[in-house]
Length: 446
Image (cartoon, rainbow, N blue to C red; front, side):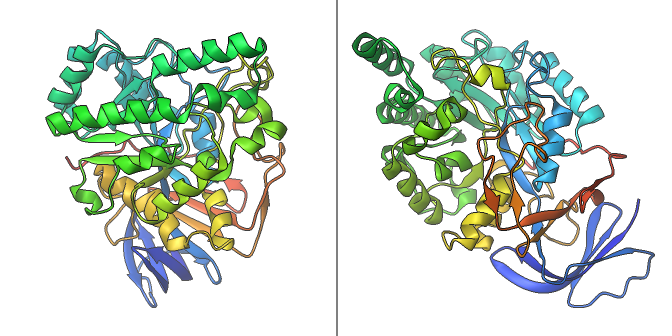
């Protein structure tokens, strides 16, 4: 394996920015120092004026394989992730067939081992009648991201609304449980009321149907069950101001039993954007009124919200162009999530140290990812060089998603990802690809 020496780069790690040299050898970070004179042959990269970040770890993506490969594949979306500085991902179980058995789960790992340019992990799926099978994940807790429960609308029959099933999994799981929290009864009642009033619904109705109350009631219920059993619960894609009262910043992340995620689209868009974007920003939970976005930012900055992810969920253009009620919900975002947050760094909304904390360090801590998420000697060399003196405009010409579109098209980020290392291998550098190595399966120190 090739060795690399990144010279005179601004290392962003654990709340500090320091000019350092970084030596990469045998897939790991060999040495970090003010000046390194290597004793082995290296390829030298001049990092002057650039920032070196630990690769982002996205704890929530939908890469659609198997069964929905007309939308995306593990190969296509992992490549897009790497181009955007995301070096590891955790992928959801609502594929076809849904991941209701350990054998189907392992099949996804086999696909990724042959095709993914990024490091990978997958969640075990749940249904109303597979609790015992889902709990077999306890025997593999250092190999699996967690158990996913859709406590609200989803696709592929993964809605779990049987309290006995939910209670059993929360009571007996020894791994992290990640939940999608929206109350199905509230959503259905809102839909029926609005449909009766209007007849024809439109994208701007989405946050009225999937409203703040639907999110709060479901998140509140999940937390009550988790507190009853001392479950390790992680609530995904928080989208409302009201839910924020359910989370605390009074404990270090490592001591929290209940954690929360915010996604980049809920930090960027508001309900005002439906007029221009329409179904392109239709997603679950919905993008809501502007006051929610501001509250999410405040909670992210004061650590009530623990990690930033994407909920990357690609659909074909044709599937998004359907009338509102038929249009599929989800946005492709993983290629541009880090760039979008670097935009907010330039805007003064968040520091680059905080971006690294929420997209790398905190995800590793939250999931107990082994030897990743930090720029530390001995850790896997999952590293990203970012140039904050360049810019990147999102366009169809540079989008790598298989679906071929992005809700951010036309947006210019005041930064560029120039190099991405995965396990010490330079997969992407200055627009050139070396796909000779695949990513690795994530392991968890549980």
